[in-house]
Image 1: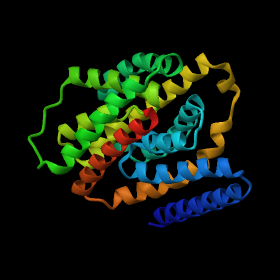
Image 2: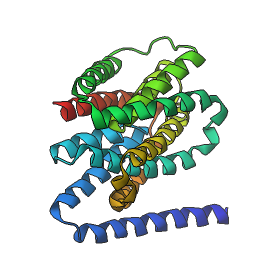
Image 3: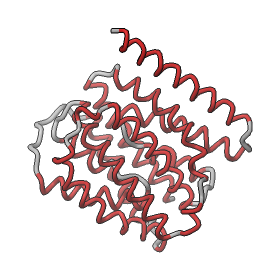
Length: 270
């Protein structure tokens, strides 16, 4: 019992230090950078409730702030990695890495395609199509009654992993396809996060590597790191709220953020 109390006290003390650091950093930031930092913190809080959609929330706001697309994806990926590391560590006991391997491998193979499209092709039509699909599907799941759960299927795992790799490289958004598949399987809130959060984390590392390989300047840049404390502050708060939610509340929030992800993609494309 004493050791449990010590961990509890240390965790709260560490979070207090993080908040103070964020407040100190905020006072020294130019207005444009402060707006990005606030966007990261709020997006991280909302997204960490269900474990995905950070890229959609932050990306649409960055588009409004007219942040360079490559710079935006770089910042989103760096901050997402920090958030996902925290969450994955907290749910590590529920993760089955061997079962996730096919999904992660196929996703890793298709990430470079998404990054190439981001850097060389007008991806507006692709983003509009995916944005419409996510918005419509998310809206449908909000309204529908709970349906019959689908059985696990390795080939579907491979397909959604490949699709997640493409969307991860293109928009820093690898989660929706895997999240939808987990929802269709009728898994509870922890089982879902134990699948798509490690996948998102793995894809973000691959995306960051591909961005660095294709852009030497970004490899030398540490710009995204300055927003990590803001991301972690929001992420810790969002994960705490997740722990108090029921599976039904989690399902409703997941559906809502699928809609938000779709709207975010549409905002960035139009």
